[in-house]
Every structure is written in structure tokens, then in C-alpha cells.
Length: 96
Image 1: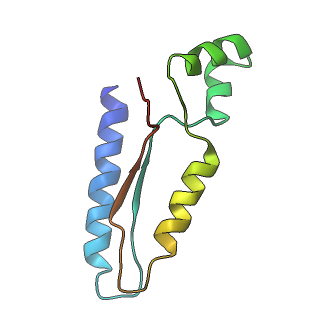
Image 2 (image 1 turned 60 degrees about the horizontal axis):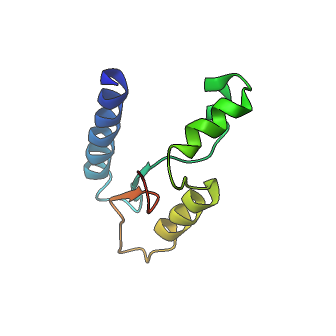
């Protein structure tokens, strides 16, 4: 978890720095922080063991669908030019 957490902190600092460097341009920077999402990455973790995949997701009451993340991206992009969504944390309602 140390490497994972460190990489996430690095992404956060990168986006903050990038936002500052691009402040005088029309480019907006948004950091997305999705929670547990049903994606194919789980398939690589369990190497096609569908029962283990199901058990993993069943630990949680709900997992996000990729479409939930896509709607969040559309929301950020749909803002007027003078509005910047700095960061979005997208989490399932019942995470635990």
C-alpha cells in the first residue's frame, strides 16, 4: 500500500502544479479520484477466477460502474469556461 499511496500523492501534487502552470491558459485541470469501480483490472488480479472476483466485490455493498465515472467526467467538462473543478472524489454511497 505504501507505493500505491505514494503514487496517488504524486498524482495529486502533479495536478496541482500543472493547474498553476496552466492558470493563464484556457486549459483546465481536474483530478479524478474514483472509488472502487467494476473494471477489467480485477480480472487481471484474479486471473479469470470469477468466484474470487465476485467475493472481492461482495465485500462492499456497492461498487461504482464505469458509467458513473464517465458521468463525473462529463460534469467537469460541461462547466462554463470560467469554472474549474479542481478535484472530484467519486465514491460508492455504501463503501463498507
